[in-house]
Amino acid sequence: MALRRRPVRKVVRDGGDEALSTGTDSQEKILADYGGRIMEGLREGEKNLKSISHYELVKELGEGGMGTVFLAHHVSEGGIRKEVAIKVLKDTTDAVAIGKFVEEAQLLAQLSQGTIVELLALESMEMNLPGHRDPRTGRTTGIKKSKLYFMVLEYVNGPGLDQVLKAHADTTLLMNPAMVGFILNKAVIALAEAHMLTDDHGRQLNLVHRDISPSNILFNKKAGITKLADFGVAKAFGGEAGVEKKLVGKPRYMAPEQLEGYANPASDIWALGVIGYEALTGFSPYRVFGKTTHDRVDNMRRQLEFELRAPKEVRKVEHDRFDFSQLSDIVMLCLHQSPSARPTSLELNSMLEGKYLYSKGLGPTNKTLSAYLKLLDYAIAGGEIIPPPDFGGGEDAKTLCATLWVEDPIDSFFDRRGSEYQDEFLLSAKNKEPNPCLKKKDGKAYSPPV
Ligand SMILES: Nc1ncnc2c1ncn2[C@@H]1O[C@H](COP(=O)(O)OP(=O)(O)OP(=O)(O)O)[C@@H](O)[C@H]1O
Ligand SMILES: [Mg+2]
Image 1 (cartoon, helix red, strand yellow):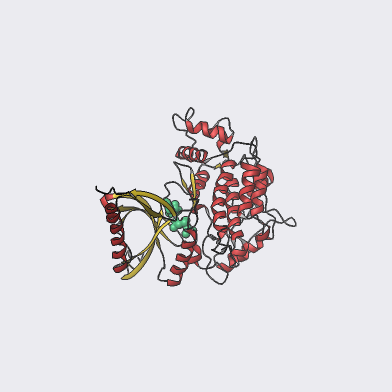
Image 2 (image 1 turned 120 degrees about the vertical axis):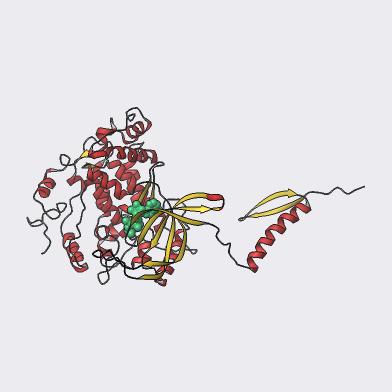
């Protein structure tokens, strides 16, 4: 009598959890051999799988302080195309900067909430780069063989906050305060995850973004998702901001201590405060005047001696179900000159949610943001508010009315500038004070030295 084979139980190791599967000995052997052969081949030969994919540049998206960003297609086997953003870094002959960046990127890879723009790869290419172009003659001087590093990033298909703010400015419309609070909250959730990151021994790593600004807050319009871009890039490729060195990033968003060369997590909170102030009022709280680094820092220091008007002393917000005065106070806390007096990212997150966005129940969601961004597209047409044809009865209008607690999204969605400002501020602005956001000191308005 033939012996009946008992099915063997095989342990398939699957990232720590042990899963059981059954099969015959011979099947097992083939499977095991296949995996074994691959591993053996890799061990013997190249160690790493060679990439069989490549990138095709589609168009330039923009240029920032550290590089130029392109929309590209990642084309893989069978022609599968995926949109990615490629940031070609400037001045990347600096091996130290690349090393620092890789270190930071490795840490950021541990973040799990999907709130920051994901780095998919860091690659390099040799290229014959044309030299400088003389604008007068149109001639290019020489060709230089260069090794260019580029980051392959998750592509965020929507506007940046810089474009959203520009659309508001172009149409002389101010942003809905609840949407400002919502975006700040999403950005600070991303910051909190990075600020709280610890090493294997539980020690806080104190990661700092250093370049929080509207163009580094990106939106996926369709899903209403907010993502923070360029984490760690300023640190690696810009160097520390400091008076002795060239100011990197955007001085307008730099905390006083960052302008002096000491950035810490609280400096990111200051930058969010500046963004919140600008989005709520349409005005920058501090102006960075001057051509030289020395002049700019000096001007900034002088402005810091003046008391800043709170957003509620600049803009009038009436009939707001969300407490504008609370949001104004929260933004002012972020703009405290002493870093230790500013809320931490976790505190800011809970203040925004608990005291402002959801203190009375239902508030904005990703869907609201998506509807807002879609409506903004129409609103900017020719500087007029032109709602889409079916807007009145559409889903987007319903979402905006329900979660922003407005009667009519078109009317209550934006405020027209001018009529919405507080009288004293308006007077300062009409008098063309260099910075109308500052209160007078000893009866005198701030004026930069000539
Ligand atoms: N991952 C991305 N997906 C889609 N668009 C992007 C992405 N990253 C950047 N962009 C776009 O490319 C433009 C240029 O980006 P870049 O980061 O180089 O400059 P920046 O954000 O203006 O300044 P900074 O140097 O401070 O980051 C941005 O305005 C943004 O709209
Ligand atoms: Mg950027």
